[in-house]
Each structure stands twice: as C-alpha cells, then as structure tokens.
Length: 251
Ligand code: MLT
Image (cartoon, helix red, strand yellow):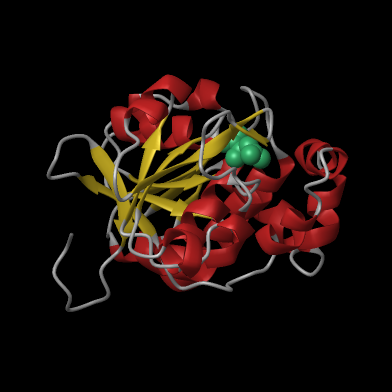
C-alpha cells in the first residue's frame, strides 16, 4: 500500500487519485459536521458545491445546511457548526450540505476517480483509518484546505491517517514525502489538538466569528465510529452515508 497526502486543492489530480481510496479531510468544519450529522441519525448527507444548488434541493424531509465565510447562508436551516447537527435536528432527515471548501474537495475526489471516497476528521480518525485500510488499495488523504491554501489542521489530521495506516500495515506501507511530513505534524500535536486548532488561521477566524466552541468538538479524537462514504444516490447524484459495518450490505 502506498500512502500519499495532497495538501492543497491544486494537487487534486486524477494521476494521484484514480483507483485509490480517498480520505477527504476538512477538520474545520465540514468533515466534522458530516460525521456528526450521520452519527446523529441523518439518513444521508448530500454534499453540494453551490449555494443555489443547495437551495434548489430543499424539500419535505430535507434540511439544507452550510456556510459562506463561516456563517450560515441566508435561508438555510442550519449552519456548519457540528453541534447544530443533533438527533433532534437531523435524525431521520436528509441533509444537503454546502460549504466553502469541504464539499468541494469531496466532489473533486470523486471526479478524479478515487474510490471509495471516505470522510475523516479527528472525531472519527480511528474508524476512518480502519475503513481506508480495509479498502485494500493505495490511500490518498486529501486536505480541503482553505480557499486553495494549505490548512495546518487538515494536514495534521492527514498525518493521523498516515500514522494509523502505517501502524496497521507495517512494512507493507510506503509513504510519500508529503505523508511523512503530515505524520510528523500529527505526532508533534496529537496531545494538544484543541491548542493546535486555536493557533490555525481558520481556528482564529472561527473564534473571531463567535464560533470558538466548535474547536473543542472538532478536536475531540475518536468521539465517533461512523465513517461517511460517498455512494450513488438512487435518485441521481451522490450522497454520503455511513459505511456499512462488516457483514452489513453496502448502501
Ligand atoms: C469549509 O468547507 O470551508 C469549512 O467547513 C468552513 C467552515 O468552517 O465552515
């Protein structure tokens, strides 16, 4: 198994993703929110890129969530704070989610031919590592970044994926230089993830917006066992659903 990390969207190209298992990471906050929504019992999360596209998908039994500039878009039911996605708010409902970078990275991974496309944050790191390893393919951790730029928190989480896979695969795993760099970052910060998030540009921006409470949620390692996986939607398009537990049929 080869393990690679793409630090910025400029690197999202088919040559590095085709046929590989992709683990898409947007710690602040899209991947954390997607994990929380599915853990809270949302029937599916529909990741979309455009705000108008998201609004057009609203309907009975469907909630629309997401952000621009970190804040809930006008007319949306929910913002992008993981704590908003509870059993009471999203249980049994379909959630259309539109965020600035995270949902775009998911679409890019699928468009570049990666399969499966999984979603990870610190909150489901261990489960995501297990799922990526079980795919039996090369693994590419994709950092959503922020408006095209490198994000420290995504790189550190990608390093957690690398560390977990390398531990599980032993000598069978080979790591790109990017993977080694990310792993080093994770190992240096794994005991102080909230502090790390507080030092990042995106973390500081969320604090300035009054959304600082989200950082602690996004930094809580392995609080969830759910792994969102991109699947074909019977109605067309693609949706994120929980990866089936071993023995259960694939959705
Ligand atoms: C994104 O997709 O860029 C993020 O999730 C932004 C945010 O913090 O809401």
